[in-house]
Length: 148
Image (cartoon, rainbow, N blue to C red; front, side, top):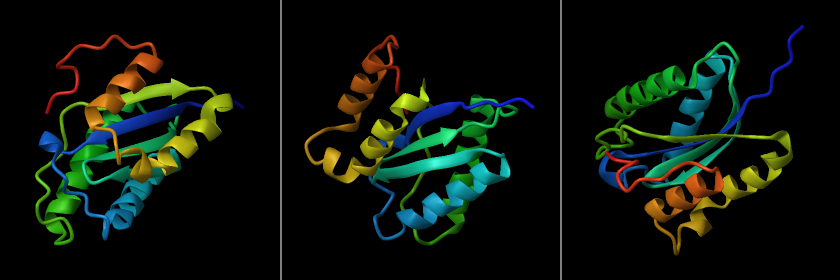
């Protein structure tokens, strides 16, 4: 029997970084995302965010391509949010997303990082956070890498 752990820290934001994920209903969105991941055989370890972006730690099913998962997740949540009066101003997700693999040894650290998003963003912008995450993951970073 094959054994695979494929942990991914994923971040994706609203189009134009608009603050359209309201705190009153974000748990509904997170539950919907969890149900989509579950249908794909992926395990949601942790999810949280702020009004303009979401962080997830998932264990990706080895039969699922990350790019396919993200395309389906963004399109499904966009349709769900458009039909749902809880997110009246939502106009879609930005094109790109951030994803980095991590080892099991880093799992608890990333869980705590995701859990503290509300406090973390009191003095830090999304762009600053993405730059730091990319640098920490060893990714090259260009000014326009995370466009709408």
